[in-house]
Length: 85
Image (cartoon, rainbow, N blue to C red; front, side):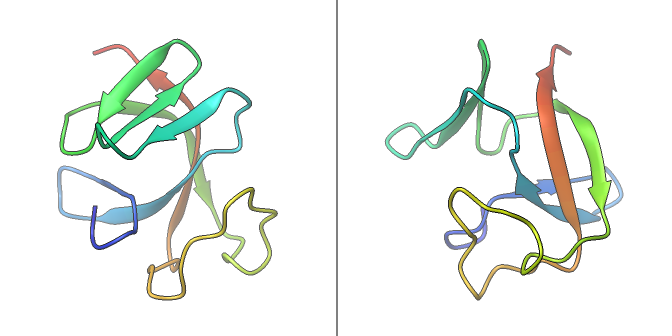
């Protein structure tokens, strides 16, 4: 997390703003974790995210909860599932 923005960081330092188009996605601010289906991952944990990068900007996507203006949406990863390591 960077402020109120949730990013996925790659091993090389690259990062993407996380977007969750999947039904059954929930954010728990108390535990700082995201649940996708039956899998949960806390902020700062290692994980794998099924999905892919989108070329559509944050202003074009249909958000349930849009990211704040200060979130860097230059690169966005659409997370379809959390994958077991």
